Picture 1 (tube, rainbow, N blue to C red):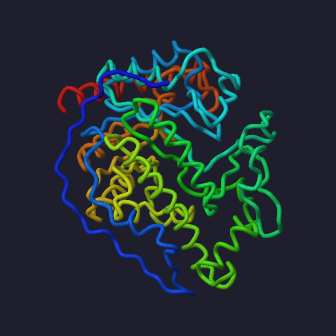
Picture 2 (picture 1 turned 135 degrees about the vertical axis):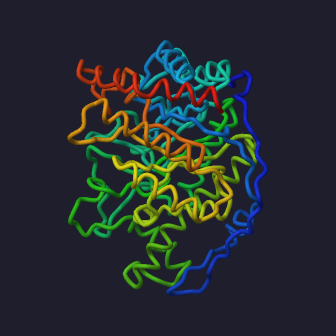
Length: 421
């Protein structure tokens, strides 16, 4: 189902070009970029400013809506609050919150067509208010929960060979967290690119926003204290040996580097698809704000920006400390990237502070984000507004009061930003 409607306005700034980064290539301790797969992709030009500037964005999770009225209320509240971009989650764990031609409907919507298309409706309503609508997708996660999906067409059942297997031959265990696809397999990367092509080619989205474009290998996905290492299936190991001449235990640094590069290959393939299927739409990603921590998940956003594979990054700069928040942003700005940096902030825990004092800290971080970059993205809708979300936030009276206080503190500031930009 295609969507029509006016576009949200986009400021197209002039961006200085930056030479593409080179790539080391020796067999053994260093890795090679094999088969010429990346050569054309790594030499791209600096991107246009496809993301609305300055960016005043908010994440809306897949748990926030179940009905058309929910979607309408969400877009109305976001627009009235002064946000000019909504990152609207439509893929969580290998199921869809839109009329996908590839993946089944999400269980959260009953596992079948709910009688409306959430993404189509969100695009239509957002554009009517002059707000950009970016489709937010979880990339690697392919199921979540302690029980397998009932639908035989869901990836967990349909393609068990695409998931993670450890060095003992065991498939990644189901848990309260995600089980994930293996991006080291070319067929997995091709599948994911196909899912996203189907989405961006058929919907009037202003952008594609990638989340979990990394290995979700934190506990309990990889049990704390275990020696489990993913992925160690025979096919992945054969691909690794063919490209490097190594086994994982021969050189752990090389093995980590290669896994990181497989995620970058996926990013490069998504970028190439976007420029072909929807060249005017922004490609953004939620990334770790501390590079060393991101690399632990085989995510290398510095390289993605230097190779011009993204139009902007959204930093998950989640901290209660305004000083730490600022320092992390400044570390990114010091790199001199061509693309916009969008600080992402959350509402935090703020032990020892009253709800109003905690909201004032968030307001201070908004000011820091504006001062340093001009941009921000707030996590998340259900932390500011009441919603159907009972997974990430409670809907009891205490939490409703907390959100009301946050709105009293933050909405005047957000609306003032919208009037002055």
